[in-house]
Length: 237
Image (cartoon, rainbow, N blue to C red; front, side, top):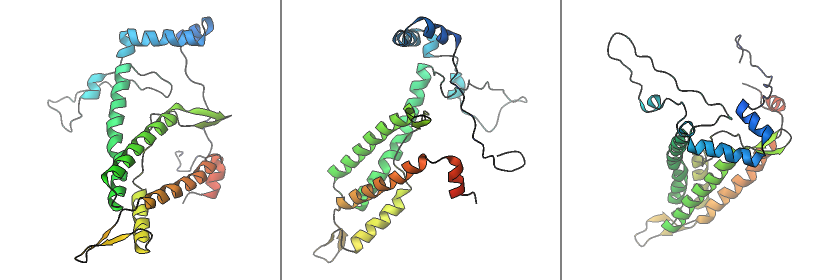
């Protein structure tokens, strides 16, 4: 958005990945495999490859809403790493562990809620959780890899992005489950004392997954449409 409040529709021009003189020298005098091996050796065997120049004190020190003394302490900001920049190994492992812990709760919660709503047994619930973790792990690797498909089309963003289950489907799926129990698609169990409970209905979850799979082709098709045409189809409000 520009300074006068209007929306800028021009897309930025792609820029080439940054390169250093050291990398250019190795690319010119050695094979790609030898260059990668040498680069990996320096990364693992040097202190800069493990720690870099990152401000780990800034990473581990909390920001307090108050300070002691008259002068406010100044904190040195850590270096900014661009898309193709290399992170030190310690920082990369720390960020990876942080992402893994942050994504864990969000990935297993929707399958647990679905299994509870459909009265599924513990074995099926464990299977759903395992399938969610495995599928999200594989798709996250694809999203972070940025695989070139054709010309300027890529599969994945190349960013540290987690592909996981969405909480947005909970309300819609629960409405579908309620309708399937109401019309008799899913069984209802009546006990001896007249209490009516829901029976296990794993087919309902399969139908929701199948519907989501079919709808995903629409999103895949729309991803190949230029952004300017999408703005005409879906104008800003």
